[in-house]
Picture 1 (cartoon, rainbow, N blue to C red):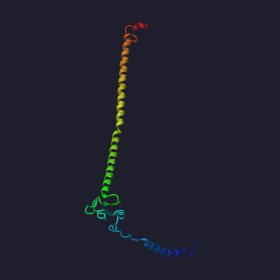
Picture 2: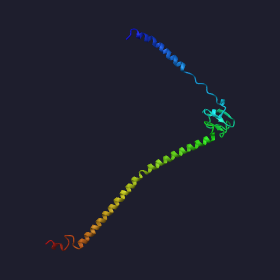
Picture 3: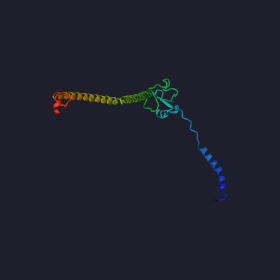
Length: 177
């Protein structure tokens, strides 16, 4: 396009690269050091921080002992310890969480048992249908047997009174003449 435009672009590229890298370096700052829990003087300022534990009996905010699941009684009794919110003591929090976990576990167990029972009972209608079909077949066979017996008795009676044309009957010779 313009003569010498490529040369100017080659000279400006390193300069732009240096400016971009310098601006990236200025944007990085280090995080401020965390405020120690002991500096908080009220429960409302202490418990919003997950690493802090407020003790009402001593009236101080301490670091939550992360190596222990529950804070030891030497640090603060559970009925006086607050973590997360000021209106709920640690004992009540543990009880509520235990009840919720128990309820969830029982619900899952009941659901699993119900699913297992439903799966076991699903083949049951097939068995019932097979039994019903077998009974129908037995009834049909007995009906056929009775029908054959009835026909045999009726034929016997017809033969006795000469209502059936039978070659063995003594009077059949004269009827054909």
